[in-house]
Length: 481
Image 1 (cartoon, rainbow, N blue to C red):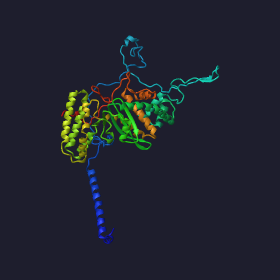
Image 2: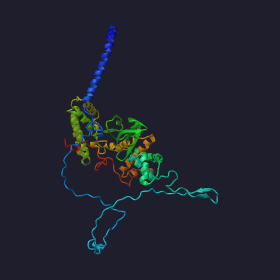
Image 3: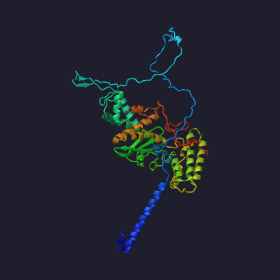
Image 4: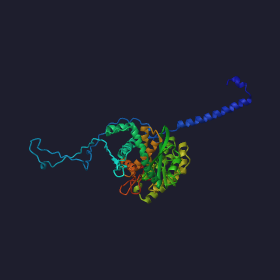
C-alpha cells in the first residue's frame, strides 16, 4: 500500500491497520525471543539428554606415543574336557640317531586341540505310507504317519527353529537366508517357503508368548519401555514389559498408555519401573522412576547455567545409584539409614528457591511432584533403580529395525514379537535362542521348571542381577554423604 492509498483512507481505517500491524509485530517479537532462547540453549548431547551415543559428536583422538607394556603370561584356549577323538602321536625311532623308541621312552605329552566342523548336510527322511485293500472287508486302508513325520510341510522343527533364529536374532533377510541355507547347509529353499515357515510358527510362538505375558502380569515388580518400529511403511511402537523371570514384547500401532492397560488386563503390580514418559505412569500401585535418565536431565540444566539445584541433584542421583550397586551386600538397617540420608538431601534441594533457567525449572517442578518415586528401590530389594533391563531387551530389536528396515505386514511384526519374547525369556532360564525356539515350537514351556535352573533378571537379597544396572560415568566412585 503506497502513500496515496493511505491518504485516501479514513481515520478509522488507518487505526484498524495500525492495530493489526501492532499485533503482528508483537507476535513476531515473541517468536524472535523464542528463537533467540533456543539459540542460547546448550546443544543436546548423549551426556545431557536421551540422544543416543551413535548420534553424538566423536572427535578424533590425538595421537599418543605408545607406552611400553609390562609382560604377562601367555593365554591359550582351554582344552576340551571330552574330545570326540584322541590321536596318540608317538615316535618309532629317534630322529637324531635312529635308535628304536617305545612308549616308556616318551612319557611327556604336549596336548592341544584341533577343532573343525564336519560336512554339514540336512538329514532327509523319506516316509512310505503303505496302503491297500483289506482282503476281509474289501475296504481301502492306509498306514498312519509316524509320530513327528506327519504329511504337510517337509521342514522339521529343528530346521524351522534355525530359520527363525537366524531371521530374528541375526536379522538375516529372506534372500540372504535362502542363500546361506544353500551354501552352508546344502538345502535349497525359496523365500516363499521361509515366509510360510514363519507364518506357521505364529500359532505355537503366540501360545508360548501368552504364557510369558501371564507371568509378567502376575509379577509384583514390572518394568516397561518402548521404541519405534516400522510396519507396512508406517511408524508403530514396540513395547517391552518384563519381570524378574519373563520378558514380553508387543508391537502396536500406538504409543499411548492404552497399550499397557490392555496388556495388563486389570492386573496391577506393586511397583512399576519406567522412565518419565507419561504413557508409563499409573500402571502400578507405586512407581520407581528410572534414575539413569535423570542425571542427563540434570546435566542439561547445568549446561544451561543452573548453579544451585541441578548440580546438587545430579550428585544425589549418582550417590543413590552407587548405593543401589552395593545394595545386595548391605543390611536392611544400613539401607534404612541410607534412605533417610537421601531423603534429607532431597529435602534440602527442593526447599531452595526456584531455579531461573527453563530446563532447571521444569526439572525442579517435576521432582517436587514425583519425589516419592525416586528412592523406592533402596528399601525394596526386588526393585531396580533403573529400567536398564528394558533398554537391553529392546536393543536387539533396534538393531533388527536398522538392518532390515521393518516389517512388510502386521503378521510378520506379531511373529517377531512372539519369537523375541520366547528367546529373551528362554535365555533367562538357561536356554539358548535355538533351544528356546525348539521348545516353543514343540509346545513346551520355556519357563523355569524344577529340573532346569534359571536366573532372575534383577537380583534379590544375596544374589547378583543377571542384567547389571546402568550407572553413568562416575556413579560407582561417589562415596558417603
